[in-house]
Each structure stands twice: as C-alpha cells, then as structure tokens.
Image 1 (cartoon, rainbow, N blue to C red):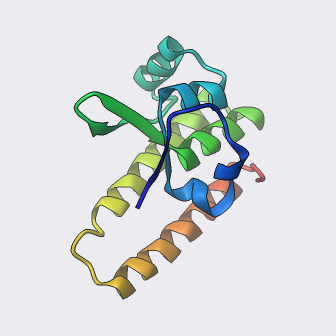
Image 2: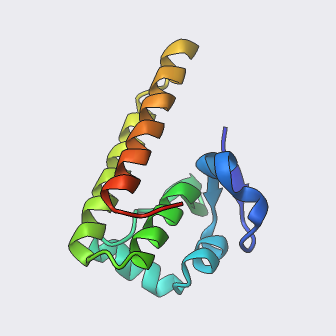
Length: 129
C-alpha cells in the first residue's frame, strides 16, 4: 500500500504516488531542510507531525504531510496556523486507520473524502501546489 523512500528527494515521487509514500528520516531531512534534531524539536513544539513506526528500528513520515508542512512554511503561516495544520494531519491519520476491515467501495468513498479534506486544508491555509 505504501512506497518507502529512504534516500534523497526524488521527483518521481510527486503527484498521486506522494499520497502513498512514506519518507524515511534522510528523505524527510532533505525535503524539509531541517536537521534531525530540529525535526524532533518541531514535533515537541507541535509544529511537525509525529513519526510513524515502520518496524522495531525504522520510522518515517507520510510524504503528503511533509509537503503540506513545507507549503505552510513557504506561505508564511504562523506557528499557531501550523499547529492547527498538524492537528488536522494527525486527525486524517486516524480516519485512515479506521478503514481496516471495510469493503472496497467503502475504502474508495473514504479515499475520495480524504482527498477532498486535503484540498480543503490546502485552500484554508492558502497554499497552492
């Protein structure tokens, strides 16, 4: 379901594939421009989404979340606005977690709903893709 990217930024992970890509720490650092310690500082400040566990010794971040946070910074959003974005992105993860055990039609409907929510968030924060 997810594509993993452990390397540096790769333009082939743009668009639809980005919605299913999990970026490992080196790729997240490369795309955000932040160091490892700054990413973890931003997490404690509520300015970056929490990492997802990929296994006992591996973590990553959804590429669409990294892109949304980058766009918010580029568009000069305040820290409070970015905190709200982080809360929205975490809520979106919870919605995705509830799809297990649902039928294909239900999953498609939920995916369309999440795509709409994502576009609404982008519009609300005044960022363009």
